[in-house]
Image (cartoon, rainbow over all chains, first blue to last red; front, side, top):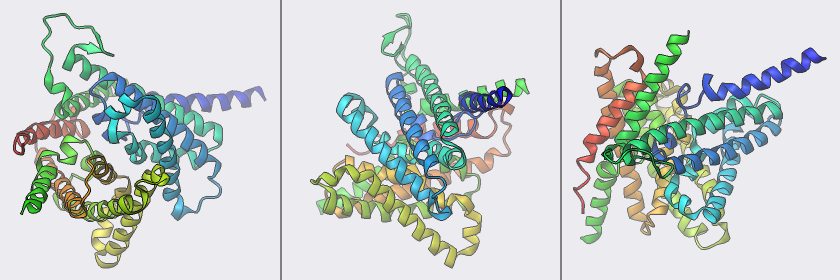
Length: 206
Length: 196
C-alpha cells in the first residue's frame, strides 16, 4: 500500500514539475505566444495575466475533467471553448471590478485568453483523459510555468526599457533606457534570444 | 465622399499601420507554424481572410442588434467564440467538398483557425474601438485578413530563403523566426506616421 501511494505521489510530482521546465508551455511547446509577446512590456501586467491564466486553466481543467466521460468526440473542442469562454468572462468581470487600471492596460488580451492555445491544449491532452486531481495538478504546474516565463521575459524588457523592475528603480543613473525594448520588436527579439538560450541549456544537459 | 475616405483610411491603417500580427501580436501561432512554405501560407491567409470577414461582420451585427444595452452583454465572449467556431466549420466543409487537395495539405491547421487569436482579437477590437457603422466593420475585418495574409506570406518568403542561410545551431527553428519577425516589425514601424 505504501508503495502504491508513493507512486501516486510520484505521478503528481512529475505532473507538477513538467509544466515548470520539461514541458514549459512557452519555451518547450511554443504555446500561447500572443499574450507572451503582448503583455510583457512590464512585470505587473505580466503577473496579472499569468494569474488570470492560472485561474482559467485550473477551473476549465476541473470542469473538463468532470465531464470527460460525457463528451462526444466531434463536439469536444466546442465544449472546451465554451467552458473556457465562461471562465474568462468571470476573470474579465473580476478584473474590471477590482483592478480597473490593470484591466484597461491589458485591454482585449484578457478575453483573448479564450483562444490561448495552452488552455485548449491542456484540456485536450490532460483533463479529458485524467482524473480530477491529476488535472488540477497539471493545470497548476502549467499555469505557474507560464506565469514564471512571462515574468522572466517582462523583467528583462522592463529593466532594459525603463531601468526599473516592478516599478522600482534598479539601474544606476547613467543608464540610458532602450526605448525599443518596450515596442513589438523588443518582444520578438528577446523571446527569440531566450528560446535560443533554452535550446543551448537543454542541449548541454542531454 | 468622406465615408469613402474613412473606409479607405481604415483599410490602409489595418493592413499596414495597425497590422494585427506586427503591432498587436495576434495570430502568432499560425504565423510561426504554417509559414514554412509560401503556397500553404497563402492558402492559410485566404482561409483566415474569409473567416475573419464573415465573423467580424456577424459579431458586429450580433453585438449591435442583440447584445448592446441589455444584461446579455456579459455573454459577449461566448457568443463571439460560437460565431467564429461556426464560420470555421463552414469553411472546413466548403474546402473539403470543393478543394480536397488543399484540404489534405492543411491538415490540423484548418480547425485550428478557431483558436487563431487574430480573429477573436479583431472582433474584440471592433468592439473596443466603438465602430458603429456596419460597412466600416466589414472593411476593417477584410483588411485585417489581408494584413494577416501579407504578413504570413512575407514571412514564408523569408523562411524559404533562410533554409539556405548559416544560422547558429541553437537559434535554428523558432528562435530565428522570432528574431526575423522582430526585424520585420521594425520595418513596418516605418508606416506609423502615414496617417495622422
